[in-house]
Amino acid sequence: MQKHDKNMGHTSPVAQRVDRMDKEIEARRRVMLMRNENPLGDSNRFPTLLDGSRMLDIGRYPDMGYSELIRALSRHLEVDSECIAVGAGSSDILWSIGRAFLVAGRCAIVSTITFELYEQIAESMGVPLHKVDSILYSHDILGLAAAAERKGPGVVFIDNPCNPAGSYLRGRQVIDLIELISAKSLIVIDEAYFEYVDVEGYSTSIGLVKKYPNVIVTRTFSKAFGLAGLRLGYCVAEPAIIEMINEVRPPFLISSIASELGVAALHDHAFVKQSRQLASEERKRFLNALRPTNLIAVDPVANFIFLRVGCDKTRFVDVLRSQNISIREFGNDPEHIRITIGLPEENMFVINILMSCKQHDFSI
Image 1 (tube, rainbow, N blue to C red):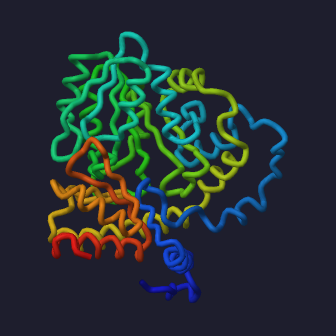
Image 2 (cartoon, rainbow, N blue to C red; image 1 turned 30 degrees about the vertical axis):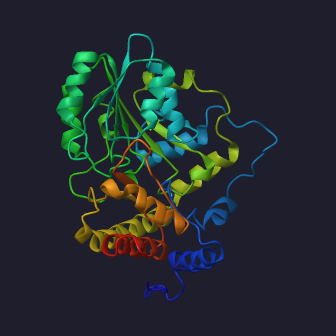
């Protein structure tokens, strides 16, 4: 990997982090590619970004309305402030949606390949859960709509892009799904990996909220913004839905520091661009190396790779563990694993091991 930016004439932030990771890998030989975290960590600019901000009085409870963060999100998303709710990560927002809307008489509808949290929320709320078989690792629009018609009213959960598969629905497909489902059902569109996607036809659903009042779009600061440890997320919906979500949220859920860093992160366009660029380049590296092995289940669009390792899954996992590589295994799935896209050196380390397993009968 090129260590210096030709245009800038000095060591780039990515190169600096790669150099640091080189030392860390040598020191502990633990490659964490399990949770789809940003391999660049958080922005190096945070200290600078916070220098000009007001001093935080952490001896006081935070603003219960998180007004500064919501105003910043309003400007960033170009939506009204009353259409935004914030929480401790998008998972917290999703739990709040469950508490507010998965009540007696309602059900949850999900795809078989999707973010497992949706099922956990439905089970916790004690409502029926209906699973619709995914097609080619993607959401079955007609199947989901039919289930909502047959089982509704309910809450339909769609992750776009899909986690763990990495598939996605085009903007037109999302609209088709919304229009096929009764307005009595809610449609939750989880865009946790939105910032990473650069394929033609994909688009955010935030602009659909005004036209379709039964749509909620959730997002997170944990991925492209690199703030997984702070726990910060948000959703966009019509004001009446936002009010119901806020009613079931505990107070003071987001710290003053998390809120302030969230505002700073929204202004750090360069870091998000670096994160997106690194993921894009490394996706290509994985595809070019592994496509001949038939391990790639879906051409990835986010910051992770979904691999179909089949009956050899246990052997793959054991070899990766033996090399101190942590990946997502999915205990209820006998054939697939998910690997987070890391820094170039980490990715090459993993690719070489995977190819060695395929070519040399797991002898490394």
